[in-house]
Amino acid sequence: MKQQRHRKILELITNETIETQEQLTSRLRELGLPATQATISRDIHELHLHKALNSQTGTTHYVAPNAGESIASRLRGIFRDSVLSCHCAQNLVVIKTMAGLAGAAATAIDASHQRDILGTLAGDDTVFVAMRNTTAAKLYTEEVIASLQ
Image (cartoon, rainbow, N blue to C red; front, side):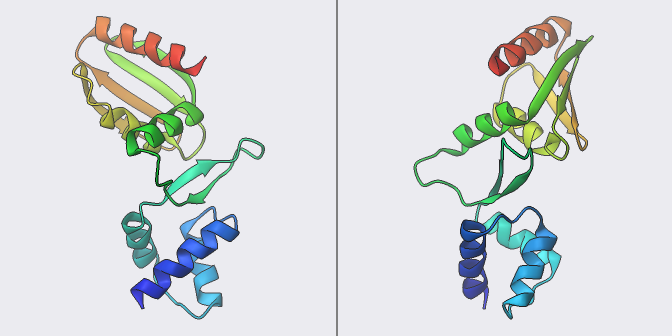
């Protein structure tokens, strides 16, 4: 049942624009494959699905990972596509993202394993990055701004 559901999920996200877990759950039910939201969440994790940005509509939808694309490369792309602004406040860096993408941006930041980053905290459209000191925060802010241009 799980393998059949995984195959159908991959087929759905390839042939349709699936933006939410609820939408995916609904489509699977329509196809006779009922699943709970928790099951769909696990399936998304196991299949390594991620959300891609539609630059025309500004919405995101589920996509399967590209075989030749590294996770680090995908995270950099997600970060670059989701960040709207970046500002420094003492040893904190405040990054504004498109709605719903702060978690993805924070994951990309955490995956960078930069020595001066102590941690991140993400809301819906804002990421707080705690830096080792104010100098590190200023430098990181400049790096982020440069990467967006």
